[in-house]
Length: 267
Image (cartoon, rainbow, N blue to C red; front, side, top):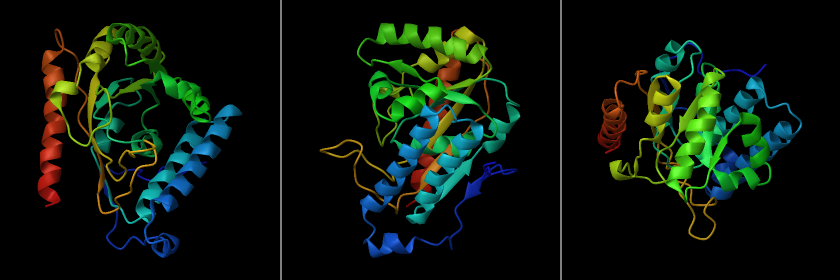
């Protein structure tokens, strides 16, 4: 059985004395140390999914490998608001967060899966990518084109509602693309609409995963910045009232406030 790394905790901070991998140092802190281990985990996870074995324990197991990899590269992990996930007591919710890098999907099972069984809304093209398609199909991910917003909304409301009614939660990144900055103008209300349609609460998620940046030539092989902290912060669940505008504003305010606070802390 895989160990949940953050059991009984409301928050977590990587210890200051956490050792950095000697091999990472010998490789002059090269991004390739990270990608070699990350892709190894990705392939093993995909093979596990293809065999129909990507259950809760294995989801946590492979995601734990990515958490340990983050810390072995010298980056600090900070978690806040785990109590809000625990307070759901297994009830489904729509978790709405900003989107910054591939680290989110690689590490969120280690952070959340003990308390929340969930799936994602993802780019449709990922459902045709080797290994990734097996992982996402095992998780019941919902693919959207990001070309036709009306059709995407219809797909998310129809398929997402089925997931939520089955007792599982949905993670939604309303931005159209990954970005280091939080831009309210790009943060649509699709998550709020889904929660309202399914009659479930929303949980705000502010995250900072710019340890990785998108590459100029190959998007998923960008530079590594281990000096940048990795952060996940969850807010309290909110029921949707009326048309959900107040909850949309509250989610945006939560993320914006977290970004402001992190910038002050890291000066």
